[in-house]
Image (cartoon, rainbow, N blue to C red; front, side, top):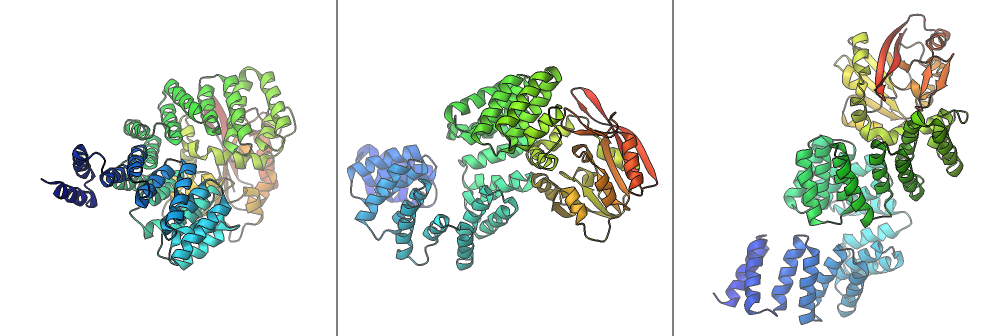
Length: 580
């Protein structure tokens, strides 16, 4: 078979997506014509389409060396360099291409994106403007211009209206909302982009990631699998699907996906971090520790890696080492609530064995981080200061506890919702669930005879509750503030489980709940009224609760003993109240 026939057959395979067959023919051609730049370039394109950009760069460099002024070869080389994050090299090539061929809009557009990633906004705007001027309907450079503007959200919204059938504006708007932690709107825009383009792995993975974040495993898994059908080498899709399976405790299925992702991209930090997390939850602490250490070597600047190492050290009861890692992470990102929560939890554990040492560290924490509510609350719980910042403490604590909340309770013999169901029986009418969290009470009590309204200070808890579709309405607000502004009509029942242990003063809450029937739990205390414990939670004396309920107008008060949970292998005694 002569060269032309072989080449045409390879091109046909290539165009039809039969890449391996095309590649085999291209390589056979190179055996007799090793310096054919067209064939070398086509091999580079196959490597590029498989995500093998290192291989692609090597091939494109060969093609460019053989034909230095051939623009397509240089463009392909720049594209793979850009994909590898070698942005300065890519930018230099794109600039050379635009000088040689100033009418090539794709080169201007890619140059604009490269400059944007290099955080050189002025240069990015100039290049994007050149691309847009060459084609009035070219959306990509206009998106880059919007992102470079002083108000990218508004500009992207305009592009959504101007180009309603193009997926890129809502996709980039979704990423923008995601960075600002407006996750409901991020998902809304992600689904708009997905409706417009069902074949883009990047768009699919973004929507899957937002479902994953709210623990909607069904939709997340479905979309990750769809992305992998389109691109089996998509590392974000492999890692995302593995994280869903890991959360479902299907470690046997998750681990090969993590390993495949790391085979494709050994230095992918997100893959390493998530794989270490899976190993941790599988109880393989030493392997998790080693994987985290690999991540630290590759990205010592990433605070979440120090945090994850600290979590493992905490479980190994190496509290000093854990605190050092948590404070290291917090110093790199002083606003991250998760790191502060982990410091507080570790100090509570340390306080059981060495209270003076824990108190001293808490005092230093407040001194060095006076703006941190968890530092103040922890110090107060150790008796080092007066209680303060309670609302802010709960907000940060539960936002950062949301993802592991239900798993943690499952290890503590938590049975409060089931006990309340035994006491209340069938609940009818409107139920106001104060501090609803992830919706455990609604899961237990919801029926055709009732509907639930949930209120919680944590938006992250509410995301998980929302995914269960059990609430008629979910409100992100402090419960006291909500009760003060609560609209009529009154609910048929108010429930508050594992809520009042985070509040010192309950009188105002009871006064605002009256005269509605009220069901709630407390941690039983021995102090005269309420007492902030080293655990960071409040206990309340039964006589104090009865006095407050009577003062609020409740006359029929029933209380029931219960073991709320186990902590440090010890029972935590509590009470359930039903008051009318």
